[in-house]
Length: 314
Image 1 (cartoon, one colour):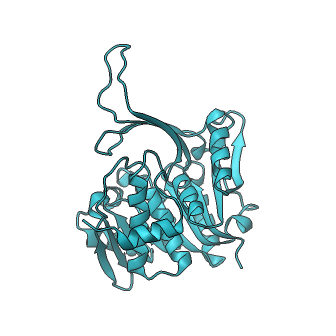
Image 2 (image 1 turned 90 degrees about the vertical axis):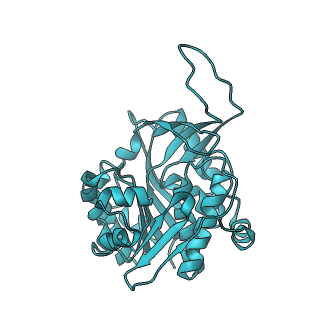
């Protein structure tokens, strides 16, 4: 029996979020807002906490600075029962952090400081414990500078060899980001980028053609998040479908795709069929969007399941 249900490796950030953002005041002026909060975010950080909230025994693999932001992220991970054995902290590192200005429509321009996400390194001695899991997630490929030079692929290959189901999310904006992503695709069961990131990598516009590009590179299935349009599933057996988004009042979209990753992992552990898995992941993402800050609207498994069963789609 694996030690963990879920291992989430990669991009963890400290976020400070304000709502609603309307303008940058001129000079040294002030604009008043209604809400201010802090949250653990990032493609792996959101996934780790949201999965833990929904009952998965979760391990964090990342780097944090020896700073106030890193202290708080560690405290928050432990608060939700996430195992922090794999969190590395070194003198001189800074915690990856963002100032997120959330507009009333949920969009969220941000100021980001790249930090220890680019420094941490899962060495060979760590791999046996790091891959002793039912589901292994690499979140934020393209930002893990030290790992993206080849070690992410080594860890993913080991996870597959250990019997884990593997999932991948990315940070990509152009074809130049493809080499870092391509090296892990042969060891990826579920490739789960946003449609914008996927199309930026491959230069294709059709959902099916975009998915086929990555299926041809070795992934078992593409689960592309489409924002307000839902999600698109396409696997190497030819199964494909689109699940619409839920009809909700959006507060903040920060971390929605990352919460989707967590929901999909929970669905895999629960043994849900593909359509139910995507719908459950969509429910997790939708709940995330109802609060300010990543995971704010995600409570637990039963709450998410009930939301999925009772909330209308668009």
